[in-house]
View 1: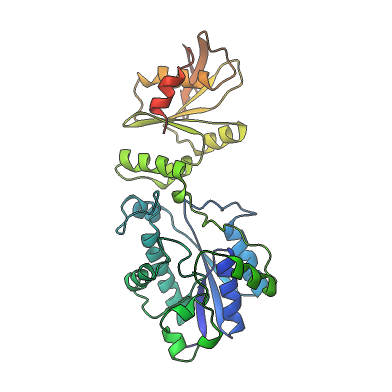
View 2: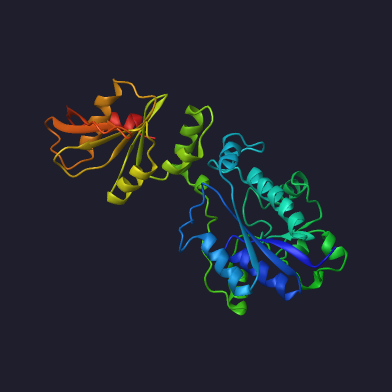
Length: 335
């Protein structure tokens, strides 16, 4: 066993501190950053990936980034160990990450993996029994070191072999972040995002949309998950849904994310949203989609208004007339 380790670095406070501690212990660290379609903090300039890169630069270490796409969506649709409070498959998520980390550990010639996890900090994945299960199912028994809580666990292999000095590891436990904040101050770490975990699947409204997608899709597509972040969503048919932009930036994003077979609706002559009709399009869904477009536009709600629509890949536009849908009907179909 050598003194090289792979550190899971989210860019958050705990993982950044863990990297600093391991470097102070004389370990050669390679950082590994994971992202998925459900990260809440993936902006190019301020997201967790960006912060992970900044942290790696601060410490002068190599960083590898791994995006988990369709395979991650497949796991979310059918997790072996179930969900947390909403639709968060935390155990299966961690197992998937660690399995990938194990492969990269071998590729990089590292001897073990470490994380910034704190015992008892998160109710589903950071219980002692859950951590043991994750370690077992990822095939990394004895090779996952958690330096912030190490004194609460049996020594890992690198500790037993003297690679890591156990006496210099910490004994943090529970949900309070005050000890980590004090450590960060001592280490000169001042920028640490995503204290809440940064996963859309833990958020009730997003989880509800994702449940709808899973229920009505044979195989949920990663492209559809991107659309779940945008606009108002309505389920009008088991094979079809409507998405309504809430402002100009969302209209532009809906335009980019829409597929060639999607139908796009706009109200003629008035400011309003881009409305996307996605799925198996039936003629009888055109009127209700048009009514929804009028409802969320600046057009008068008491008379019929012209609405233009076309399939995205087409050049010919069709015009229909529609009156705004009643709010009582919207409540029934809103996801």
